[in-house]
View 1 (cartoon, one colour):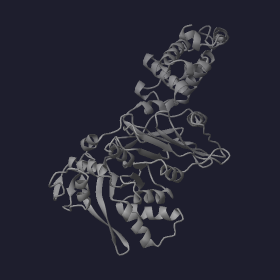
View 2 (cartoon, one colour):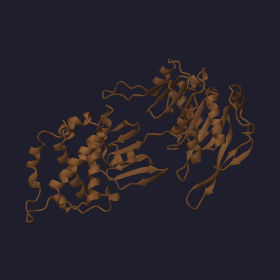
View 3 (tube, one colour):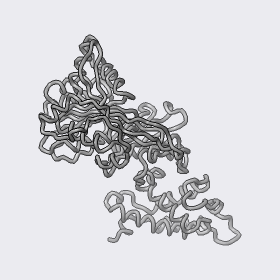
View 4 (cartoon, helix red, strand yellow):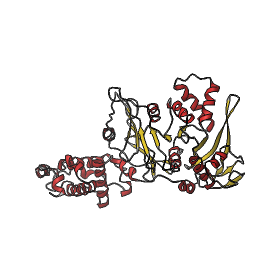
Length: 475
């Protein structure tokens, strides 16, 4: 049986005949609604459509669903299904919408959109396939924004209406066994490619449903990429590589979109392949290349409000799994206590990230998180506990031009009185913004020999002799 026979309903011919009256039988007959649609502007702007265009697309889409046997879609390769949808779409346009004013390129764009409606996530699909897009942000069915190269831009894409957007959201969450409705109006999910999704609907979202998608990179960045982008300089890259191999405990700090997870991915590449790694994440994003990796992911509560597994549960469990390294995607709450205890009890070389704007803020947030775990320690004792666990804090930042850089590299040196002490090893100094809006500046070596230098030497990590000497480097 050929593809068309497998995908097309047996009753399709009858349906086709039944719907023939849609086409005008003679010039005197009234034109179909589709014929009144103004031709879209250039094909590039095909998504900035009128309501009439969406009416046409909806009618063709519904007609296509009449012809397709949806139960067969999962049994046929997607590329073949797309080809069959294109064939049927052309046939429907030719037979039922012959007077449509769309030109050939606009017809191709329309069919591509219908393919995305049937097989993908509708108007979001082109952005999911666009490797230059990092984030997709749906403010309402009328407004879709994307982030490219660190900058937000409004696209011409839109959904037909609120119902259209809600159907796409339902499609996303149903694939991972979740639901979203008025009783549960917020949901986190993950697409098949690993991209993470957050959706929120009324009554919490006042202006209609909203969706945020953080795309999953198909090709994770390497250290050389960070150097090429100017996020670090080779000298800092050598030190980053060294502190991972020497099993220092590393905390990566930064604001939203500052590249924390990207840097965590890069650093994880330097963990020796003979070590057992356990990763713990709210939404799996890490892409470790080593073979000996166990990946753990939290689970939200079910519809009955039961079955939740938190990061703290997973951290406690992973300590029974004989990990050589523990990597936590991001510490947000009480699991910080268990992570710090692990770092203090032989699990050297652990890595994690935290939302904070400065290294000092990161330490303060850790204090707050430890308190959330119900550990009633005096402030000084808590800070001593933190300072003995964390060796290095790396601060990332997204700058005004959208670029991301490591802006500070600090070593935690211990306690002085009631305060945790740190010394800065490297720093990015911003000097201004050029005529094109690009941030100008340089990396500066502070001239401080870190205490961990001896540990690197003891672990056999060789660095350039004068690597910590005072110097300035432009990316």
